[in-house]
Amino acid sequence: MGWKDSFFTYIWIFNVGRGLSIFIRTALNQGIIYDFGSSDDFSPTNFIKKHLLPNLDSYDGKHEIAQTIISHPHLDHISEIESLQDSHSLFYAHLHTCPHDKFTSGMPDERIDLARINNPVNSEEKIKAYKNLYEGDRRKLPLQTILYSSSRSIPNLEYGIYYIRPPKVAELFPEDDQKYSNSISMVLFYRQGQHTLLIPGDIMPEALDYLLEEKIGCEKRYTIFDKLQSLNHPMWHQKACDQPSLRTCLQTYGLTVLVAPHHGLESGYSDMLYSSIKGSKPGLVVISEKRHVSDIDGKVEKLYQNQEGAFGLLVNSENTSEIRYSLSTREGHILVVFPGTGQPKVFVDKDPKILLQKI
Picture 1 (cartoon, rainbow, N blue to C red):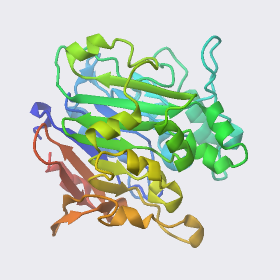
Picture 2: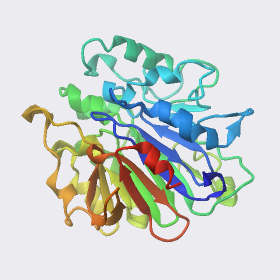
Picture 3: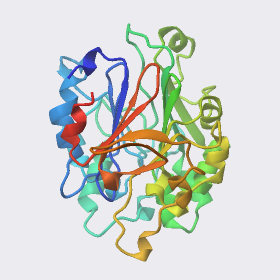
Picture 4: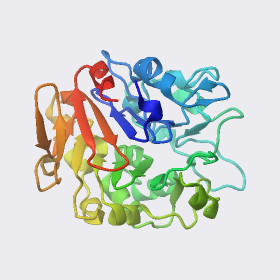
């Protein structure tokens, strides 16, 4: 495996059925994990630990994840949360970011109302583990990106986290607990060169529109992995100031890959998101699709699946290479590669070990 010498970005979107788990290896060989979903037949943390983590840069003499992010505490996003609890765990990142219910005097109130978080029966231990994550000396405030201090520098490599404070989300959805739960999701934007990625979690369209308009109660953090530019913006990673808005990022750079909000369901589609994207649509829509069992599961938004909803990217599978507008995790695990220059590469396979050969 030669990725340690590569200045490419590798994005793994794992097939975990009803859930979400994404691993980003940045072009500076850092690891970011967004959400900790899993399925009965696949554990992303086991795969990452065995095949991906040993190739990352090390911190304090051992290989570790630079940042873990939990979008919101629904069970399908935190089913492997125990892997984060032990301070000796390789997944106990220097920076852990999640909505929580901790209140610090003198700081903005960011507490979530756990009583409004709808989870299946017998999820209590998962929620308890979630609450324990922000305790300890190594934990930071809930909304922060990586403090860039490396001597290495890559132009046009950056990412940001966008978020609405839970009390403001509660004002947006005073009665609908499901929309409240989903809309506290943290939204991640990542760019390398001309290629971009948006992971909006389960955020509902009303809240995503509110975030795009950058109204009162919105938060943002941003890191630029260019040494000179980073020095010019020393507080971007830590507090909201003059970072680019999410809409500005989308309007300026367009969107190569959209991980569809709320598993690609019709109820998660946002017209404002599409109108904010340069060119009015992404290159490819990735759908972390729920396994459809009944009508109450909802239906996938049709727009995502045709040329009205995406420009199309070449997708390579075991037997074919074809232009696709959307790609579902029901088809397998997905690997997206952003090179420094040239076209992005997209691979899908039911066996994630096959995808290791692509890096």
